[in-house]
Every structure is written in structure tokens, then in C-alpha cells.
Length: 404
Image (cartoon, rainbow, N blue to C red; front, side):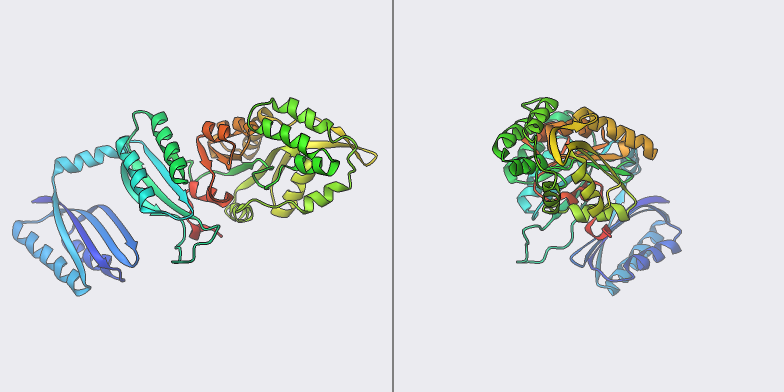
């Protein structure tokens, strides 16, 4: 007599539990239809879905053997029959789209989980698994730069994706958390190239503002820069206006500014991990090659594309050499690098904070607005505002323990 049976075992985790139960099932010639295990704070939850072919008397003897084996290791066990119709419905669901919902915060709270899961349920998404990607956080030892990340694998297709994203955005603002929602595809953990904006992304400063301070026109240039990053001014026009104000700046100040650039939180950890994992990295910046090359040497970046300052007789002329790297040029460079590396655009990650980063964020397989201006954050599919750059690894599916 064929029967489908769900076996749940739970209790203090210890070696040999799975082996003990499956050894008994093996003696009966059982087929394993599904198997899952989770351990939280040394407490085991084990589920085994099996197909049995056994008479009623043999069935009871089998279950009793499992109970005895579980009791010997102080584990509780439950059995639940599963109908064939129920099993077939479960099998039919495996073709449904899957998405990944990632919760990012300095510390995860119950209200964050409650609110987030309420939204997923309201939009018809069923949670298949929940995984903590961040490391364990000691009590009373929360640091200013602590990371906390929970990943939800959900099944189903929301009827209104725009409304779902709007709900996540509202929740992110209200609870001061970041939430990413992405389709779970083969590309998610098969990205090969990460392209970064430089100013206010890899580094905390806007270099052109630092140059302007040295030239005595800091306030004027900062106002133009902010307007451009908010999308209020055309990048090329605003760039030309800012550059003109730098005319006559002595070349000697560049080295000092470069040496004092502060890397963004998590930048070194991220680049180090990406390199060890075999990823290529690139700077695609509306800033300047001089500083991009400095960061390239410091971090080991593979490619740098930025604007070349025109310098004559040791003085900045207020112009750049060659094509200005604006938003459209960044997108073109990203596509060029993908072709050069022999990869699909879906395998590229782009990270930036300004309006001129939106074109490359939109063509990359994963575009991330990092600590971005409101317009950019609202326009990008994914945003990280609270954690450092290394939180990007969470969106790629990596745990803290995967970092090298």
C-alpha cells in the first residue's frame, strides 16, 4: 500500500539524527520526496517527505522504530499523512515564479518582520524559506556599523508589482530599513562584473567640490553639483559650468586631495570579497581619471573610465580632454565592458547615487541606488540607504561567512 508521509523532528541539535531516521526508512525502501533542515540557536527542525509502500501492520512498526530512535537522542517526532492530490498540487507549484525579498537593517526587530510578511501575504506571495545572511550579533554589543540581513524566498506572482514595491518603499521609510525585491533567476549568483560610480559612492566626497574648495569657489560649485545630482540640471551643462570655475587651479593640489579621500563604509570589504570571488570591477564616473586611477591602485579595480582633466603648464584649464562621461556614456561603457568580458547585461551590477547614474542602473541586471538622492532612490529598482557598500553582497545572496 503506497502512502506519502511527512515526518517532522525537532529538539536539541546533535550529530546523527538525520542518519538515524533515514537509516530506518532505508530498511523499508522509502523514497525521499523532499528534505529540509534548519537549526536556530542549537535547536533542530527537520522535515522529511517520504513515499512508502508498506502494509498497515508494517507501517505502525516502522513509525514505532522511528519514535524509539528519536527518543534515544531526545528528539520529538510527528507524522502527517499527505494525500496524493495534495502532493500533486504541491508539485505543480514548482513552476511558479520565485522572488527574493531581502531585509537590511542595523538590527532586525519583530515589527520589521511582521510588517514585511504582512505585505508579502497581502500581495499573494508565499514564503518558502527564511535565511539569515548576516553573522550573529552579540547582545549589548551593537556597533554603529553592524549589519543585519534576513532573506525571504517567496513563491508566486504579485498581481501589481508596482503596488508591492510602493508598499515596500513606504515600509522602508517608516521603519528606516532597506528592502530589496528581485526575481530569483540563474543570474542572481552568477554576476561577473560590478560597476561603481565614484563620487559619493566608492568615496564619501564629491571630488569636484574638493577641487572647488581649493580654488576658492567651493560654495558656487557645491550648489551646482547638488542641483545636478538631484536631476534639476542637465549633467553636461552643469559640468561645464563647474569646470569653468576651476580654471587656474594648480595641479599640485590634486595629490593632496587624493590622499585624503575617505572610502565609503564597506567599500574595502566589498572590493576585497569581489576580487577573491573572481568578479571584475569598474569605476564609471563623471568625476576625474586622476582620482579614479588612485582608487584603482588602492583597491585593485580592474577598469576606470572617467573624465580627463585638461592641464596646461601645471594649471587646470577648466576643460576636460575627450568625451564627457555623463549618464548615457556610463550606460554605454557598462555595455562595452560586458561585451569585453563576454557576459550578458544580466550578469552586471551597477551602483550609483546620482541622477546621471540612472541610465547604467537601468541597463544592468542589478541596479542599486546607494545612499542616493530621493529622485534616484524612487526611480531605481533597488536601494541601499542604511548599510555600507558591502551590503551589496547580501543582494547577491552571499552570507557573511561566505566572505573571504
